Length: 346
Image (cartoon, rainbow, N blue to C red; front, side):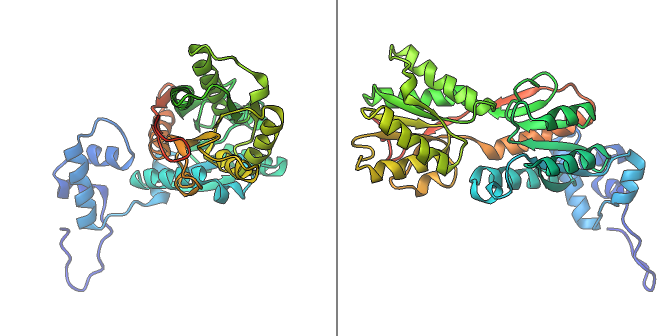
């Protein structure tokens, strides 16, 4: 502990005090505080314990002057604000990113950019050096915001591949194609042959890849790719309900539905129930995400687990690499099928 002389004000602990207390070098403490690699777990533990004992807190202003960095990271959601609270996936990502950034003594700044005015303000702010990097959530291909951020040289890591920017924007994504294929193969194993799908938006990698996984499974098992059994949604419950209504009109003999999100699957369940179709007796339903919603639907939803907690942690880790000047790359994390009552095991 740092000695305190009675009657004198306590001196603010420094990194050198932490290093002395932990029995490590100044450089090691610095690497731990900045989330750098090449620090052993034992050293990280010693430094964190020393920080707790000394009461050390980073001086953000001094750090900014010394490093030229703000110590802040933007969590940029390119969807309407209400979806941050209605779509459980966004809240899971936000919570995971906040924790991962806090572990690295970085501050999260939440930004919404769904309208032209919000996008303009976001580009001006992010290009002005107020943040060190951007965690980009729900990017749509063709959005001019993407080109503006890339041109500004802002370090970016996206949740999901960014179509058209795969070589320039780092990303962390679930294995959407494989996950979707496993969902449809589960339905085929249960004896379903007239399987419909409610896809995600075609301008997002998740929408494209989950549709491709659906098609992969049907083709592998010799089942036809019937366009009348494919309807697009926008991830929301309302779009899932509208798509399900269209599918029942266009392909009334369907015996299963793979929805590319749990929210769309929940909307589909509501329409099937209103139409007098028993789930899973008449129609089996499988979603994607394993969000908190999946276990609360009636019946509980069989779904593909999208490991968003791990995605958020990997996004933050990768962004610190990009900020440090490392080559942009993409990471894919595995998915798994979670079986519940909407489509029980065969």
